[in-house]
Image (cartoon, rainbow, N blue to C red):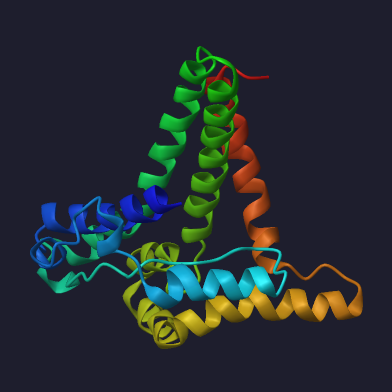
Length: 212
């Protein structure tokens, strides 16, 4: 989890730095050190609250990497690349984990079992994080990608949602499922949106593991 969240945020900062904005680099956020990215509420308190409330989806976030989009060489195009860098990092970790499952099979006994389970969990976690962050709900990365793709007048309208971003995400994660449980129906909107992309990516990665 620490590796997934840390490299996700560091990737945002690294791509922004390479595309002209060194804000994150100067603040030491292009780093694999988890302590530079942990947000007390988003990384610790919020996941704990969701766990205690028996939420169907465990959600958390690291301290957002600061990016001055106007400093990018091509702000509209480059903002899409910066936003996509985080989910891309998670997909790369998932691919590396899938390949390493083959190496884990050569380990003896309990070491093989522990390493294999850990790598499989890494695949599931990173694929889920990549898909979740690409949802077009502010302030998730997918909303930044969509903002850069929309015509300017639509982007201005859509951009107004960003001020409510965190409340919007938490509300969609927690409130509909809670209402659904009381009504006896499935209102897990995030689950609906994520299920098919996650299953597809897992099917693509499975051959890399050597498992069937």
